[in-house]
Image 1: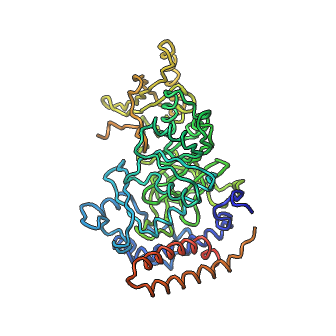
Image 2: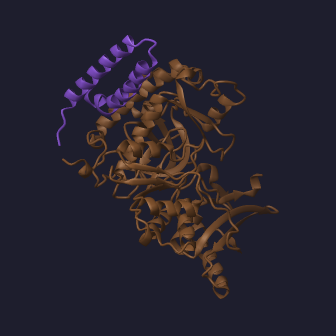
Image 3: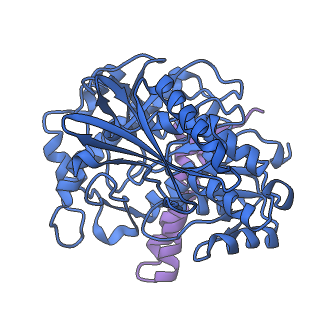
Length: 440
Length: 55
């Protein structure tokens, strides 16, 4: 069989029967617990009284305490070298890679890897890229800032490992990046959805049509939730197949889309994936119900993460995927628990705004949602930046239409304000389109 | 396509044994020792990709 015709990075693991996947995951979970208790003082204390050998079923797993991001933060707070407090489960001299979280929800968490654990997360990313159609014939352009944030570092090395030719597009302005993509005839891209959309905007200013003038045929996105309308808008603008993936600094990349583009496959059995209810964040929930994702990376031996609360809101699905992969799938992230607000008795997630804007208002170039308070009343304001082609006479009608569509989707009333072109920030990494001024 | 996973797992084990032996021989010889460790890293990945399924 020719390599380029293969469907899977690992044809054995990716098509294992469900029971076999669970069996391997439970075995790896026990190994991870044992290793965490022996190597990490933090887990030795946290898991006191829990015996790895007692974990025989998924119900047993659900009785093990979860790890919260704040605990990682506290464990590192004010600690001297080697910076990681009691979390490390390997000798510090084994460390070879440093990354840190973005600090969006608090003080950044430092997260290192050994050479081995780094190569493991890279191998996991190979599963993700392969499912998204990346092959050794691709020339992959990475328009991202190569720095302390993990962003696309794993993607870079995984693409190299697949045999792609990797073009590092860091340290360039957006116009120079677009020109470079053209010059080197890149065929694939890795970027955040926001930056993918921003590049379309800049390309237009340059008189360039990416669909016609560039040869990008596949794109993998990361870094922030990508509602389906945003994905479709990227596909249309770039003339490329656009795939989503989920990952983070602490667990690494852990799920990715296949050619079917119906949810994302969890990279089993490298992760034990669970869903718990939104209310108590503790009770296991069945497939098809919206809840909070909890994940345990199973083979990454550096800083263990036992039942890590990702705080991502999503839905698990277990209907068979026509691609043949047997791993569970999750629907695209429906928001973050940290961003979820109860406003006038209604649950509101900023993702709802993005869904409406990206699906129904192609004239909107950028937007930002503000939550403020007037007296006791919470007020939601949407700031909107329109394409220069929208003239003044269309604005009032458009303002009303945006308000109406948002009302239907969220059951909340928004104030809509237009801002001048370039008046809203652009993001090349994680976007921050929701600002809660009531918590400052 | 069928794969002979048992044969693969045996080969992986053999590579591990030989690399550990090489590492022993290279005690203090950094260029050999570190490269042997790199091989062992990829042996670990091969075990996760293949050997764990055979067990």
